[in-house]
Image (cartoon, rainbow, N blue to C red):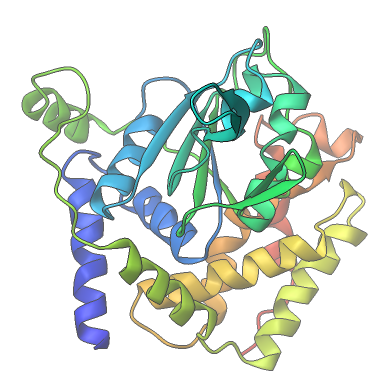
Length: 315
């Protein structure tokens, strides 16, 4: 059974790598995200494959996919749906919005207003939406992949920490190296995303894998290791706002999913250490001190890496 599962995960990754070249680690993170029942924020410049990654993941898993282009005039009802009066039946009928899909791409999420951004909170937290005093369950598996451009700030509304905390991970795709770029130029002759991508997993199989991930063994000393990392973010003079308990749980789930993806039913310290930056960096608020003024745009990631070097790894 485990052998079949590992082969299907290998085929899933291979399916995405057919189009997205040279980004094996990023594809792993996307797969870890859905295995851990989480949501992903992709922060990167335009044109590096953020939309393509979300689409390929949905197509490879035989899931429904919806792309929402976030703009300043977008309303919550444009995302969640709306109740309208039907002349034919003479009663109110709920019309589902694009949020009712297995994988939802929230493209340029920081270009819409805080009111519309917050409409995603309930969906991301509990996989349901409440409209006109009625609660609707979202399809399973459910995953939001949001994108934003970290360089351009004109006409944007930065995501509040309460919203960022709902994302299991923040990841970056980055530019391909020269060899991979040449491969892209050679193979992708037509614009758009290729339609010939075939599913290699059924969504019911993904749900079953998610249950298995939740049961991946993590020893008591590794739980203490996670707690030590989280506590370090709360005590560091470089950090104004440390990681919440939700962040600690996110790191545990990421570590379990990484172990599962690598074919193990137990977590090792390296699983935690390798996932810490993606799972925790976006949750902290960097203090405006002399030590942080010279850091780069991703100074939160730099600080998490520093803390990981200071926290003792269990043997």
